[in-house]
Length: 128
Image (cartoon, rainbow, N blue to C red):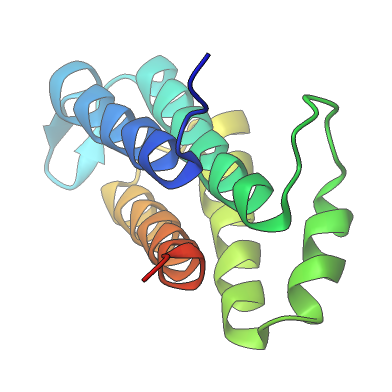
């Protein structure tokens, strides 16, 4: 069976999050109207971040890792991406995924952090 490219898979998750926000959560006056879909989008985008990072670190098991594990790994590699990860964790996983914040700015910032992390992984795993 052909292995999936973690970067492409991560981008797919984030694109799914964008679609959920656009088509299901419905934005009105910088707020989303349906908390349920904001939660789904936050979870999807955060999962994309984890898929990308797991690919970068060579993790092949499905065993869930603690957020602190990712923080420790990233701290030893790149402090800027560590900051982006902490932001993504808070914005996507906590504020959107758990709390279902309806603030569109929070969602946009979270998606942006996810894109930045995935791009960072893509740049470091590209083979020339």
